[in-house]
Image (cartoon, rainbow, N blue to C red; front, side, top):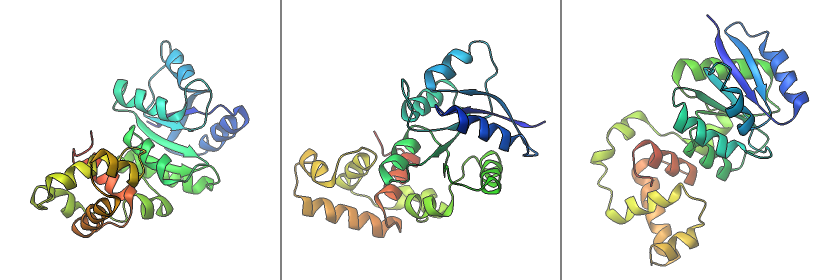
Length: 213
């Protein structure tokens, strides 16, 4: 049996083009397309829940951030693959926080998209090299498994909680009642302990290990 997909994108031509492309993928079939998250909610009243949602971010009425969160809460078994033109770290953090298990750009080659979808259903997540360098910069499994042995201070754990928000480092320092320099020290200490290089990596670690609010 093929894995089922729903495409959520307000650009009808793009959605139809994606549907045509995916029709040539051996392991996948598109059930239907939606213009936004609210449209998806309405169609689910009479249509099947898919295995995978291919989700745009910038949409009217109910955007990708809201839609991902709703899918995560209401249909946690559905795998969300973000397909967007946005490649900034804030969008990555927010989509991952809201439940996205993959992130691809719209200029991707069809073969890359097929490989990404195969990776998503096989491993439960898929991030291409450009995103992995921002997101994971490699969060090693042994590091994740050993998180209880990392000897993180209470302040470092508190800082981790704020990495998944959209606050700047300066705003985090104000929230934690300390100087921006102290926040930089927390960040650099966590980079060293967790063997990470980016804030996105810290955010993903926080989400994976229950440090996020």
